Length: 339
Image (cartoon, rainbow, N blue to C red; front, side, top):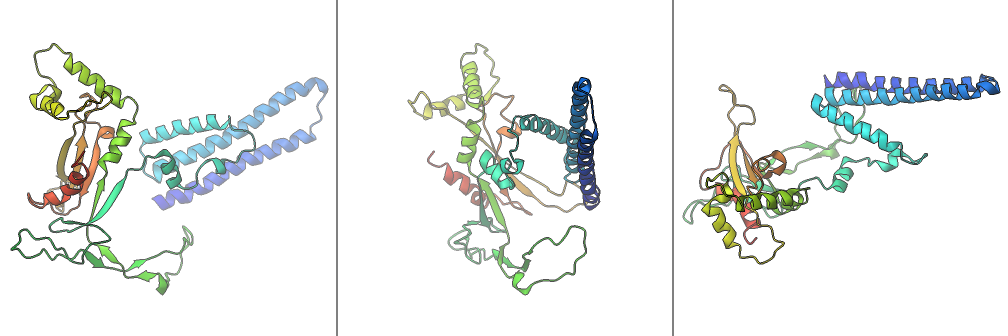
């Protein structure tokens, strides 16, 4: 399906664009051959302008339609998100009209998506570490042993699980064409035998996430406003966690005198799910998620996706037990031990 969609949309993109520009060129040639009277110059200019605007509009409409169809059919973007992409396109076209004439769009828009994400600072700060697939012991990629050295006790034998696996990987030189069959040839220099980690543990820095979280508009105002509402309420009933004695004891333990400080409390959730679906006859696997939410926010926003920090992804296919789960919790605890 994707190859067929690409095969159909690419020629249609070229056909739509070339047809519109061909019409523009024909209109210009007709303008040169036409000999109009002075009384008809104003009307001729108006009709020519309308014709040119209509041709340019055909180019924009055709290319936008092909682009949105490609997003929906090739990339699997939902209709709702395609609608958002359409709204962005309209804003881009409107903003492009303010750009000085002769400015190259290729110089304004980054060619690499990594440049765009770096400029917007939207990529999370992720850390990848080696993880034992049996006991979930965490090792630094540069200082990891070949076999797991974890011992449940001083008298126990080491885990001994291999942390790496051997495998051939192919380094592609360059794409030779999307739809042309090419002889399958492998350069011997492209074959390598790396030590591939058997299991990788990915975590996100809570400090960097909080920096992004607090820089969002109205985040601090909503936290301060909700705390003020809780403190000034006359309702005898308890309707929020911030009214509990434990919460108030946490606030007393901070002992801060800075009026600009912001006391935050984070909830930690750890849960597992089957990435292959919960089918009875399906394959049983477990993938864990460590998520942090901020109960300092109002109840209407504290559990939204955009206000939830994914602190770590616990690799499968099994779950750590009550002892080995400390290994996957250690990076998060160490980062925030003295904060």
